[in-house]
Image 1 (cartoon, one colour):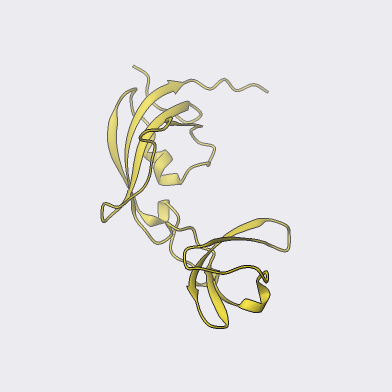
Image 2: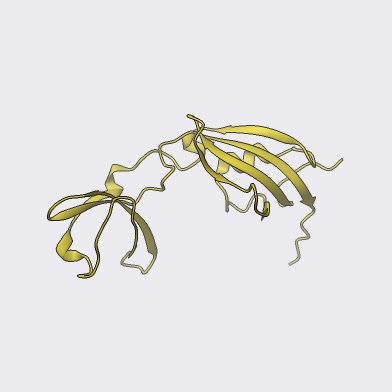
Length: 148
């Protein structure tokens, strides 16, 4: 029976939870996710947890925050004067914003506090600072053909 190896294209059903049991993402009711293992598209702890799994195998992968989205970076939390926002914007806690860095890269931000004259935005990934738990099932394993 084949086992998951780096560079395999695999399909996985999953449910992602915080350590308190709160579900933050799932493939339930949707198509399983498909990806090539080892390309760094997923968090390191998730990819490592899938290595050597067999087809149709189910398991729970516990991922420490340093193998997920890391610690909360306080430098990514900033207070911005409301005068710097578009005039027609009514900021609310939980609202997502997109900013551009000087090199043109888009940065996703979340409004975490609204004050009279300013807002506080957070550029951390929403799951930063959390250990994660994934219930996974490997539903397909394909050998990836690498061509030059």
